[in-house]
Image: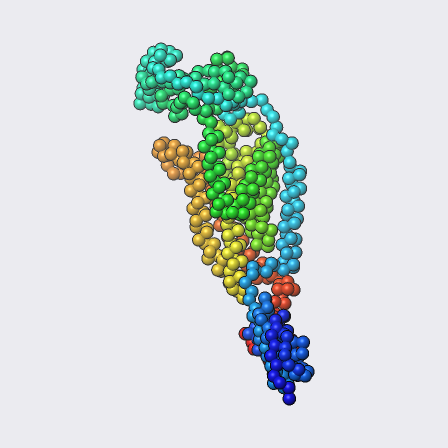
Length: 511
């Protein structure tokens, strides 16, 4: 009868391997806390043979088990292992990636073809009109400001006698009785750098000049020499640059790498807007087609740069695309039905005058699509992430349950996003709304005017697209994540967790 032996080893793949002391072998059995992860303790002289001993194995990473076997002559062995899976969720299956690629690769190819076909050779030139933004400008500095009586610089030299209850009469009275400013301005850029001119600033002007202030001056070469330059605006480069820097620092500090990628995506979006969308429209291409192609390019690069190349992001891209198509269809129908021309102010009138071939109503629709894109990205990404996280929390939940849970999250998102969009448009049109309020016009008169009707159509179409994006993206994400076919590795791991492994020589204790 052999003497008892004892050994120690490390388990690997559910089997304990150990160094033993003893001579006889004996059969063993295991007790595993994880079905399919059990092990057998064995050493160089284990399992059967003379004076076999037992083996102990420590917990290997990823697999686990517990086993022991009495030797024929009193030997016994133990194998221990524990399985812990705390890594990120496994990627979706190859089958699902193929399905998503079958949708997005043709779409991406169509966007690239559209960019190549519609890419402009540059902004078409024209002769400057000297009106509005269509003026030659230079940078300048206010070098001196002197106060003087407005009556001394009044061209007529007389005191106005008009009705001061009107805006014009009140302004004339202030100009006659008030104190004006005579500013000397030095041109800092261009061929006339160093040249100075003077300008009178009336007391009722909203923009008052001060010494040392940097300004933008308009240049009209056809005017008399002493009237060629005039102050057009204030130079705001320093505060705007500082504010942009603070914004970038805040985004990177909070978002870290994601924040950096978001800034890169933002820069690319501006490049697409400035070098493709705007010049292509000015060149005479259909504004709707240009907007769809440009918005799609912006959407693809922004979502994948910010959120990574994954099935989750791809579902958000598809949901955004469907919502943009809905916005385009509704915009086409209602802009034409409401007979909105898009030519409602001085700027659009100037554009139409310089480039009469531009479809102004199409330009309006293009603005609706591009304006809705940013908020759509936020909604679709949020809904897709919510469904994915719900699936991770409860993998047994079917697509209907995922949809119901996701849409409950989406309802809160809908309420906040629609309110945000409406208030954003209302804030942009606030001076116009104040003008109608001063005129004491009825609600019907105000809403029927093209200026307001244009904003109403823009707001409601964008809001409908946002509302529709929630159920569309949620159901897409629920169907995709619930229909996923696991990869071979994921299926094997799932099988290990759900069924006892074969080939063991002892009992299995189910988990």
